[in-house]
Length: 276
Ligand code: ATR
Image 1: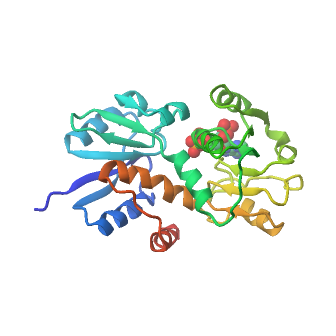
Image 2: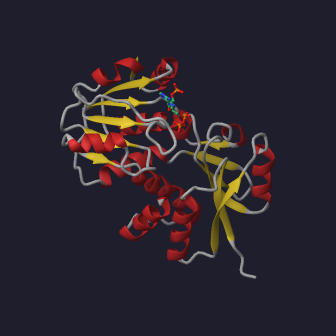
Image 3: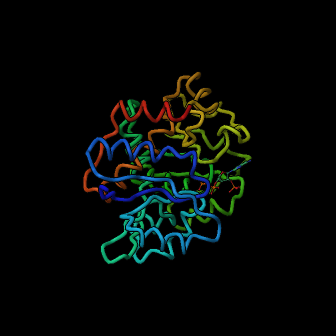
């Protein structure tokens, strides 16, 4: 039988992830004898499951909820970006079996903004980020990379926003004050799970948001969230969340296979079909 190079995604749950569709598209496109598979890991089994993947010859894997933090102590080295964000979404298994953890979510967010047709220059601008979980930390890192100077974070649990402020220059604002905090910003980003299919809606009054502010949602199911629909209706440029998912996958693929893949229209359409 043909030798298969093994890669994949670990998490819980992972069954509905679009990552296998994406990576297997690129694997086929570049002709690697490889397979990217979703590996479900039950709570409490991370350590032994990761050891098993290494024994089975996995060259690396992505990490999703709820293991993006728990994987850190299992890695022998952590890249600077992942260390600052405090989460690992990609692991490379080195030849000696040691694990290197990195985070490509911030890269995914930056590239998605740069690849979008909004052409908005955020350099020196200000931002309002809703949420203070792992995704928010990657987004704040990305905004700083894009040259945003003044970042406000509104989170239901304010302490978590204050914790981000201890690592990245940013200011915590009250969740109840989120609408007013949008005054004068160049970009608004929702990193909470609110507005996602099956989750409560994101309640946000957009009256203070400048009409030219870029509005991004990292929720991609539905693709056009209520936030994006409302923002678009008042003339704001918007960026959907699917692009971040597509772009964060590129450097992970490059780490494992040595080629930086492209996000072309075919793969984008495939992913949009996969969402349905
Ligand atoms: P991720 O790593 O994907 O960011 P997470 O760490 O679970 O996931 O973060 C989810 C975010 O959505 C948090 O900011 C959370 O707010 P809390 O820190 O207060 O929990 C936010 N969130 C989830 N449900 C919410 C709700 N009903 N109202 C307000 N914020 C909510």
